[in-house]
Amino acid sequence: ILGPADFGLFALAFVAIDALGLFKSMGFDSALIQRKDNVEKAANTAFFIIPVLGIILYLVLSISAPYIAKFLNNDGLTNIIRALGIIFVISCFGKVPQALLEKSMQFRKVATIEIGTAIVYAVSAVSFALLKFGVWSLVIAYILKTIYQNTLTFIFAKWRPRFEFDPIIAKEMFHFGKYLFLIGVVWFLKTNIDNLLVGKILGVTALGFYAVAFSTS
Image (cartoon, rainbow, N blue to C red; front, side):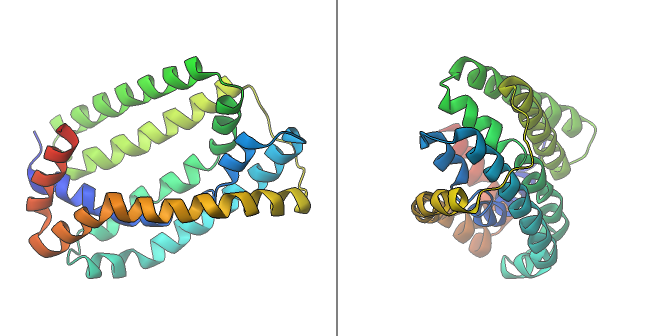
């Protein structure tokens, strides 16, 4: 239904999303999973910080989108990157509930969310593609998927935040999370450098073939 250029544009846009996505939680969610004391206070503290990071990242991405598109030699990326940037704002509200689900080892609920999320994405993408939305069918489907995933995570976790912030706990969680952030940088380079080079040098059509082939394999 969609051409290789559509998948190439989407994959290239996600290079920028993944790059800034390194900063969306700064490891606070992982720090919450391993924490053994003051868990409730730590959860509230993390929930106070992560949405702020998400909003900042969205604003940074919106402003820098034209320059990223120019660097990647494709002006068509600007609006796609800006639209996908909204996932930073949406997903930041589900980070703490997801960490609490994993911490309490409620993997049945986690699996249910992941399966439902995959179905929502697939059905949405195909439906909008049939309606001739082109690359935007992938963008809209991803945003809908993110909304569904974070809404269901919030419901399943049965946790509600309170206005509580502890700077000492925040410092402890940041200290733990900074090492995971560095690991994330290495992982980003490992998983995105190929898309970056193929898209920038060979163009989005070649990247589309490569992205679908890589995903299939």
